[in-house]
Amino acid sequence: MLSIVSTPIGNLGDITLRALETLKKCDGIVCEDTRVTGQLLKLLDLPKKELLSCHGYSNPRKVDDIVRRLVEGQNLVLVSDAGTPGISDPGYALVSRARAERIPIEVIPGPAAFLAALSASGLPINRFVYLGFLPMKKGRQTLLHSFKDEERTIVFYESVHRIEKTINELAEALKDQPDRHVVIARELTKMHEEVISTTVAGLPETATSMVKKGEFVVIIGAV
Ligand code: SAM
Image 1: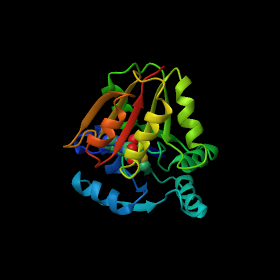
Image 2: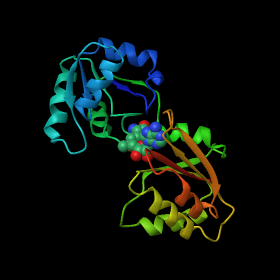
Image 3: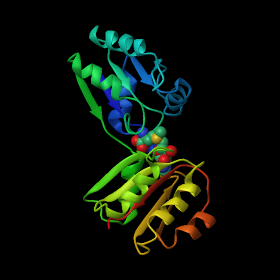
């Protein structure tokens, strides 16, 4: 059995009862960074487990080895460093191979930063489009300008290194829609959690004044 388990995005208290139970009884854990997952087990007071590192840059033979273990009947858990596996994180390759091999799969849902940000945003979220991280170069400007016509709420991830640049680029790309709502969520579920509600017109000021530390989700209201 392959169990796909979501883990907290900052606050340890967000681990679910099913996640705890599954991590406790599994034979091994497939993770991104063995140090991060080892530390999580320690903080949650869970028994040590074999940690199998498997990330985006892993040799495909790693996936073969994990699939072989699953076929032999091992109960393995898939986690990422934080949040939901496969959401702007590794996981897809293994889950897709496991499905092709008809290995039983269960999902233990839990935190994902974009969902937490959307529900805290105060914007209409019945229809939204999740873009993960924006492309850094090719297609970036075309994508930013396409937001002008997007009728659904847009949500994407941004790193601390690019948040200021991205906010300023958004202000420029959407300058004809100054009243459009923008929400920037920072450090959700952590001590310095902050949700900034502004508009396109307010973005340059936000870019200057906001604390540029931690992890960010950006949300743009529908046209
Ligand atoms: N798998 C994760 C999930 O389910 O949300 C996302 C992993 S992705 C590599 C990491 C990005 O998610 C960060 O750069 C940031 O944009 C966003 N993120 C993760 N934790 C966050 C938090 N506590 N507050 C705000 N954004 C967060």
